[in-house]
Image (tube, rainbow, N blue to C red; front, side):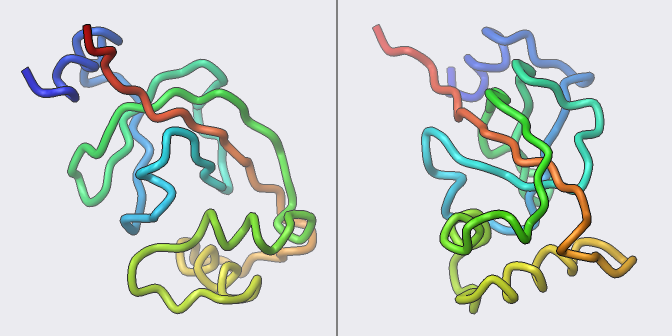
Length: 129
């Protein structure tokens, strides 16, 4: 049985399990712990288990360990860069990160005042005996 199938069984993941979609194969998604910054919490809550997905491909199962309301202008540039980097990206400044965030939304974002949600995610793995 593949690891993702084992996790699906272990955490009782079904068609009602929430999915967190990613628009790029971010470097962070290969880490045990990573962050994701979103404009909405939707129905996500601390402790929820979600499926991380890229273009409808299940990447892994993750647990939401922490959620905090933030304003991007208050987040350290280095932290933003770690959150935004993906292979072949040209992101090197805070404003490149802002442009990436803006690309996900039609309405202009006021980066000084817009509330976002910072999620601390834990990538779950099966324990090997």
